[in-house]
Image (cartoon, rainbow, N blue to C red; front, side, top):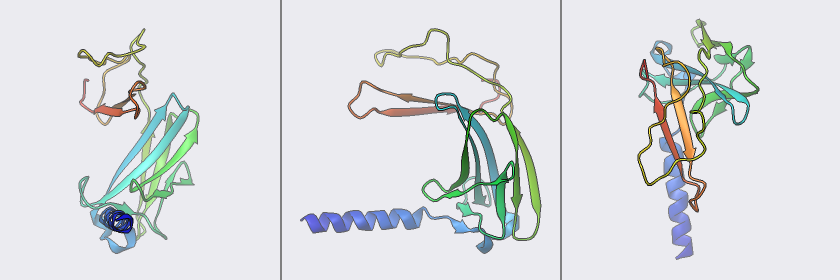
Length: 175
């Protein structure tokens, strides 16, 4: 029975890894590669993350891993590929409020995009806990969102045995 379970787990892991693997950028028509660049700051860890996600044909297409001689840089530093999340990213120590993404493709085209963390927000004053027994509406302190901004709130239930995590996000302009 043990070996049957182990074989089943290994087979499932193999299927997940094959199903979620990214295509190499040199195997994709360069004009079909879609990119999304993100610059985010986490005050709890005092880290800034620069990330670039590449897809075939648009945001819902297959993931693409940028392979040499193509490249992806943030502030002249290479963004390594994370094969678990299919994303190129680098975590930087401290607050980095702006920077430049540079992507060079296999057709020798170079694309330069600047990113800025334009508006800082904070938790509501006096927020220390949230009851799971009643509704709660989270209203951050700071300006409303503008185009191409997103707020992600991650909450961890520290009283549950598994430290359950909930993630909420919005990118609605004016939110």
